[in-house]
Amino acid sequence: MDPAAPRYLTAALYQFVDLPDFAELRAPLQALCESHGVRGMLLLAHEGINGTIAGPAEGVQAVLAWLRKDPRFAALQHKEAATDAMPFYRMRVRLKKEIVTLGVPGLNPARNAGTYVKPEDWNALIDDPGVVVIDTRNDYEVGIGTFDRAINPHTRSFSEFPAWVAEQSQPGGVLAGNPKVAMFCTGGIRCEKSTAFLKSQGFEEVYHLEGGVLKYLETVPEESSRWHGDCFVFDERVSVGHGLVRGHHQLCRSCRMPLGEAELQSPHYVPGVSCPYCHGTRTPEQERALAERERQVQLAAKRGQAHIGAKPQQATLPPAHTDEDTAA
Image 1 (cartoon, helix red, strand yellow):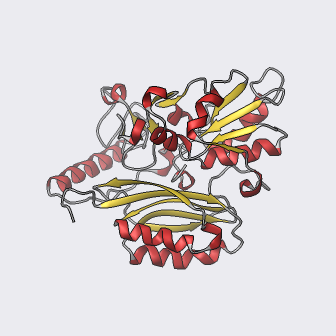
Image 2: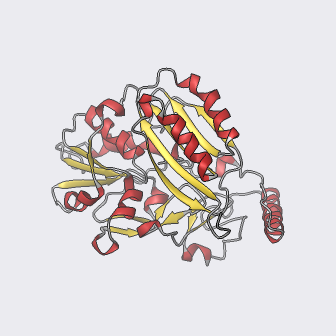
Image 3: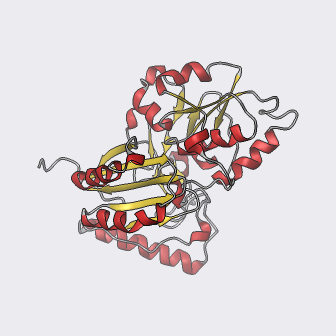
């Protein structure tokens, strides 16, 4: 093996599919991942699978091959990236009510999603002034990059999206009159479920970007792109740009918000302890604990070791940073 080659492969995946026996898949999938040195998070529900895993390339491929042996997962798609560092500390396979939480009973994206639009056809769709373009991601994600003409619903979590649709469907709203709608998200899962929701509300022409922003940035040349800024991703890269090149953001290790150059220059930014978004939200005791964790991380890095720090207080995390967003 080339010593300069990346040591790990990260794979993000999801598929909406009817899984009445989803609970029975948990134990063998957990055991398989552990036996191959694969870590990360996989969510199973009646509506399908969602998650991100990482490990040796052969281990990740073994897990994907095992899933695809099930005829229901034969068409499972994934997005992968090479990395030098293991981005996860453990492997968890969890059972959920939904693989991405919208909170609307009865939706079935596997049977009633909107129309896929390939990345190479996306520009023509969103350039149409008669199309309402909606970014289904959360506010902090939209803040670092989005498409031309995209409407930001200013949601803090995906479960707020139905209320926004109800509000904007009223007279004077951007969705009044049942317009043609195009939606997108990071990897495709949120916009796919959003299209199923809009169709359940009577919208007839609903489209979503196949493969999400990540597939668009990978496929469409920068000189032809309608995308501006970076795209937030739920792994150690924090953000990516065109060609999926690592972006310009770092992660606040206290509240997990993406930080650009302006935030990193803020007097409220203290590595591992605080940033402009979470400054003043911690008790002195919590700040001391975070500072000590950062000190241990830096000492471990000098020794060439990984350090598993204490988890931040869950109450201070942005609502969107949930298990359901691991491949969103």
